[in-house]
Image (cartoon, rainbow, N blue to C red):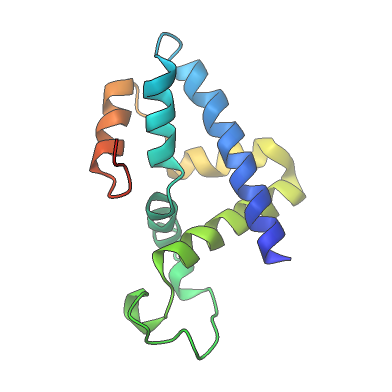
Length: 131
């Protein structure tokens, strides 16, 4: 069930970001919008938001994951696991409140900057962007 919620949350976040970025940056090129969106939906970016929300202390993992070095504070949660958990929460938000609830929740935590160049600077600081 959590995999389906994660998949749903990922898909809905992708759509919400696409819609918001087109509205916020109507004259931007597709390449810049795509690169910026990649930075926003990366596991690293989503795991940062999960930590900001305190999820790293709430997600339970099996004993085999604890102490593997991937998590913060000995939780055993890797960046990928925490990012995927954040997507699952977004999927649950969508299931209970719809796409608008996801949009409100996400952008309250991670508002888009007023200028695309500021969003691109965020993306370039992301460790996953290789473009």
